Image (cartoon, rainbow, N blue to C red; front, top):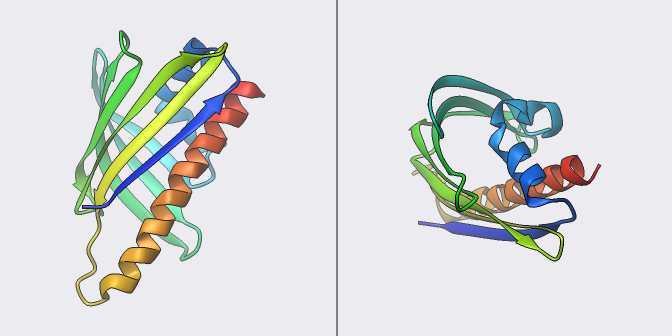
Length: 146
């Protein structure tokens, strides 16, 4: 199963970046590829939301239900798709204080099969996932530093 990992430095305090990341329902306000995030249930630091994203290259909407488990003591979020358009999607976000700012790491494992289209489409999908994670890095950076 493909894995994508990214890291970026955000020149803002850890508490601010973590707060922005934890408020997923506000993502449509500052992430162009996220159309909606609707809270389905919450229990402490566990949130289940319905997501609608868009792949601009194809004008394609992607829908999924995601569970987020936030650990405020380690500044970590483990998440997974419960149902939706991906065959499988899960990952982790970690946040750490670094030189007066925040180191934000993402790791995402995903499975998205289109049986009749094969390896070429898998490469295209991988490139889209990488671009999406880089977009999250940019959006968090702009929001936290701006």
